[in-house]
Amino acid sequence: MTAELIDGKAFAATVREKVAHHVARLKEDHRITPGLAVVLVGEDPASQVYVRNKGRQTVEVGMESYEHRLDADTPQADLLALIERLNNDPSVHGILVQLPLPDHIDADLVINAIDPAKDVDGFHISNVGLLATGQKAMVPCTPLGCLMMLRDRLGNLSGQEAVVVGRSNIVGKPMAQLLLRDSCTVTIAHSRTRDIGEVVRRADIVVAAVGRPGMVPGDWIKPGATVIDVGINRVEAPEKGMNEDGTPKTRLVGDVDFDSAAQVAGAITPVPGGVGPMTIACLLANTVTACCRANGLSEPEGLTA
Ligand code: NDP
Image (tube, rainbow, N blue to C red; front, side, top):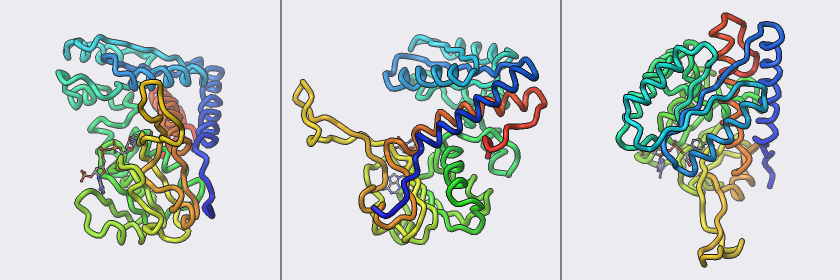
């Protein structure tokens, strides 16, 4: 391997330290404790793990964590009423509704019912528009984490060729907007892109957010490029042995073929341990930013886009 490894776990720890420092200042100087409300509807096992981790890390940095667990058959009107209460609660500075929501609930309606100033996921249509027009927005956590890692490694991103593979509303599109805001020349590739290898080969910065294990091989990477792998894919790993039920054990891999890409790239994020840990760290960063904005205080440096 020739590429430098970008250690997302270590980077996320530094982000959490900065957040904890700002939380302490808010408490000491202003008697304000930032609060994050997380709403979970139903019993999706993966969502339960995410919500537990978010709650634990929120408390660890000194913030208040408010968890609202609702039954899977909770009527949409009840969920909207809860969001209205949280919007009006001055001790809540950030609101996150864990996705996916059950089928009978209109996720867009629910997300757009959150006060945009408390929308720490950055999914409200107002925040999408603010980001697209270069105004002060709440920025989605995963792309914000990627941007922080890129700025840390490359400094000023101006003029860099950036290719984002994937155009989802939660990763690809906001990532492209952030890179554009930092004056990169941005291309978004997706499932209909022709000669995608050729497109990716132009890039000084590659962000892969697709959900297909190892789809970006090393020979798509320009020598020296910085590669950010957002993908989280669980694949069978028979080399790790078998489970009790006779099925092979599994492991997590990214959208980039790490072994071949690491021979060519200048720097690369691993999976796991790359972008993943940054997402919750950026949720905490967004909550402290939302708290500062709500109280007319200056924003924490280095924690916003
Ligand atoms: P989506 O499924 O919403 O979007 C995937 C995108 O990839 C689509 O735009 C799709 O294109 C594109 N795509 C699919 N197949 C191809 C292909 N063969 N060539 C080029 N583009 C393709 O996924 P998300 O954005 O939500 O997530 C992407 C990955 O990132 C997943 O692995 C997910 O688990 C991970 N993730 C990780 C997070 C973290 O914290 N690290 C957070 C969020 C996501 P089209 O629009 O044309 O269909």
